[in-house]
Image (cartoon, rainbow, N blue to C red; front, side):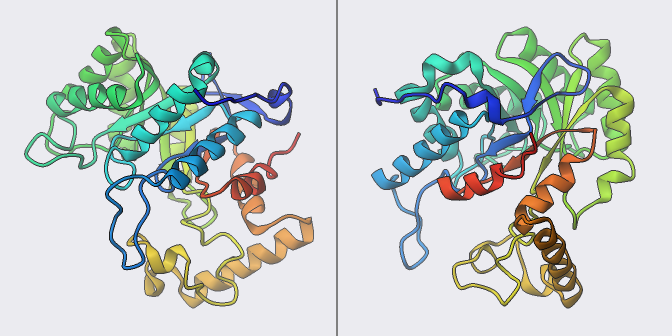
Length: 327
């Protein structure tokens, strides 16, 4: 076991918000595991066959720092890594080594629905996939239950009732305390809220992409959440790092724009977008904060938002993001 000593005053520096009309409170800043908690790459871009000790130490230190500073919500999914499953495995090891005695102070969320394993049952929203997904996730993390289990995306082929009933049964089985949905269009979200409420398993949270550059959810999803007593959790608050100071003077060679398949210079860093990012940076400077801190504060102004998920590749990066909290 790791010799880990908690910071006694950790809750004093964080704000907490109720998740919709549920009794569950979430830290305003959540730690996301989409990237940064998988395996390292070799210099030629190949994935390491196993986790390096230095990688594990870095991941553990980030989780410890998060918890020491009042972050209680930890956001995972079965296919986070890379490779798939490795983020949950890493988190499970951290829990076993040093965090297990604090399980009841943590809100741990995971998801199923994106591609995870080969074959016809390895993704989407069938009962077959959802049930296998929760069981595999619990095994990887070494947990008896998660606090929130999400349907990670809508399935256009599986009857929605089948997916939703699987969520109901997961709660009834004790494998999750609450359920949520992610990236559902408004029409399907409305059906989900109605079905889950009718089966005594209300949807307490919707997770969607929301930031100063991606604001589509303002038109329908956010008002719908408010009307249905559903909390909103925002992911990609810095739009894959674009809403930082990194790209103001060009594209760094080690940036996500270079390494990631999710960003494209021609699509995501147009002259218009760059001009917008520079205007945000100027406003942030006037306020005496970084561009990232300004962008996080902008999201937290919305009353519908229960928590904002941030990624972190280092303790220093997470420390900077936490400075966005206003006490």
